[in-house]
Image 1 (cartoon, rainbow, N blue to C red):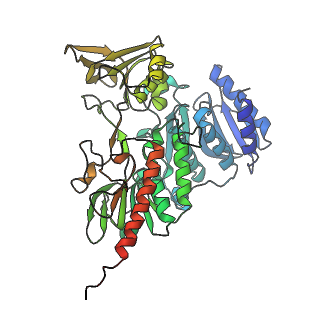
Image 2 (image 1 turned 30 degrees about the vertical axis):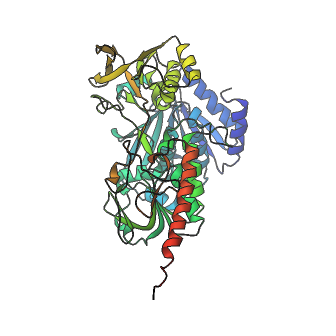
Image 3 (image 1 turned 180 degrees about the horizontal axis):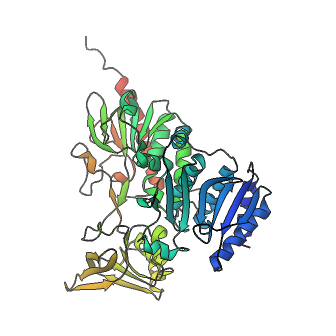
Length: 517
């Protein structure tokens, strides 16, 4: 039995929502993955009278396609879609059976109207929390448009194929045999990447906002909801809705929610925002903010949005080490997400740069997958919690190097080593390895502000207890500010605080000065 009792019970409820017949065409060999795949599809067939199974020869084995009888939908799973891809399997079954997708109608129409042949392949890991968004979006596109196909390929099941294409990060997407993109992509982002991005004219006639929130993470969602609940015209301009939380594997400290995952948390945020009359302008990057009669936010596409007040909640990004080889070998051995990319380094030697909680957690996770982990910490001692250090030092395949300054990441086509200097002696050393995971904290996304908004030496926006910046009418919240604690729950609180302060500012701004005559 491939499915445990709990998953089977959950799946049984979903399968009751199927509306018509679905045919699973399976192609298998004699290997263990093939046997497990055949067991899975047979088990699915016993759970619903709508599901039929047939054997055939597909491009890859083991793999199976999900079709309507007599119609090739173009959806194929090369590998067993369990783990994080379980939902991708469920949605494919439901949508191909006729269940309407939960997607914006404008996006659905854009996909249906695409002309040309598009054959997508996505290389994923079953432990990757970002991969399902890509898989589900490409599957949906295949279902909506007969000229689009998509094959999900588990890099662990097709390791030689993944290595032959030099895939060292997931998700990695190919379109018509050519590299298309890496990392988490939503349906909207994929469509935009294919040349259907919002035009500057889409912003030309927008009325000024009462509260314009710049950012896409938890602080943004909280600020926008609090503002909208006050009945004021609210807008969000976001480069990527969800921000850094999209890349968070597990969330165990959001009070009242024992455990969730970053992408699921973001989806819940987005659904909550949609409950209000909030104009969400996604895939837009701000490049300038200036206060005139109103606050103006210029976007990189040239559009200018106006607001009576603004809240900056642009969050933070992974901090780079800034050494030769880091940018050159990104996704070619240099990675920032051990949960996503770790399985691609199975049996290899990797390094983790950073001795804080995130670095040591990464090293512990990777030690169960790779051959050996070397941790490099710049300071004389690790900064991680003692319980994590105890666990780390108990592992037989981990080496910890303290007082180690990374000098260079070396390689040819891919990473082949790392050079560091012992800070106490200055002597340089080189380690041969195949992967480097950078885990040294975050940088605030505030570079675009220039000298307009006061920032501290770390680039964080300086705010007071009301979330007020040095510019009247402009507020800030979340990880882009000088708040000392960078936590989701704190960001959401600061977003609410900034929204309430902005509303108070709006009220006071509308009160005319008393006449002196």
